[in-house]
Length: 83
Image (tube, rainbow, N blue to C red; front, side, top):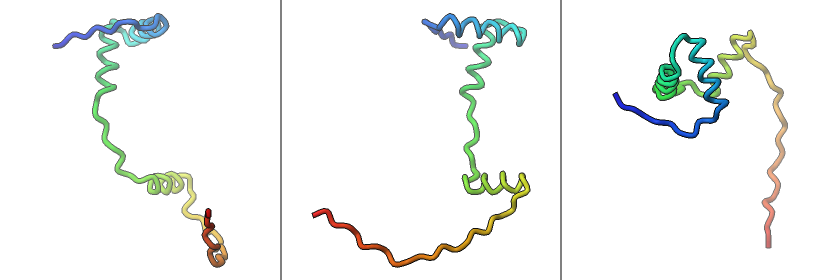
């Protein structure tokens, strides 16, 4: 196993790390190993598009669809010139 040294850790961070390690019932060193392991684990990329995620979320909320009124469209305006 490899060793790593981390210098210049803020005292507040160290104190919070000590409390967190105590809450989990192990040493600060073990807590850091666990945090680093979780941080570098590969997470699967989202295969769902934003559109699909929104539709799924809305369906879970009981909203199946929304009918929007058609908007009347006129001719396009002329493109401005910057002469």
